[in-house]
Image 1: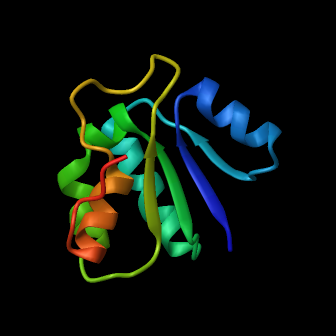
Image 2: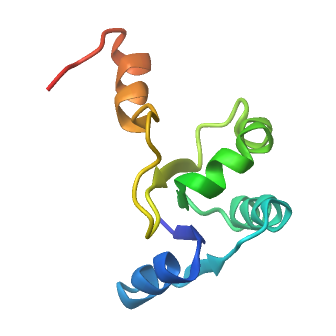
Length: 104
């Protein structure tokens, strides 16, 4: 499975050092949407995107993945840290899949 990363310079540099070839530095929301479309066309199975960038394009992303099972899009904090008050996307996914909220 291919992995793609969309985010700021620091984030994509780390992933490139880890061996991810499909890593794109994006700062503008419009460019982020175009990059997501390109990654989806290239049959990337996992797309990692920074939380702040994902927040800016939430509606466009939802429209792109509507009715599709792939790719899986995971949001991660950028170099400034996690977005405060944000719902953990993994916990939300588990709650949606299992039907109950799991607390740790």
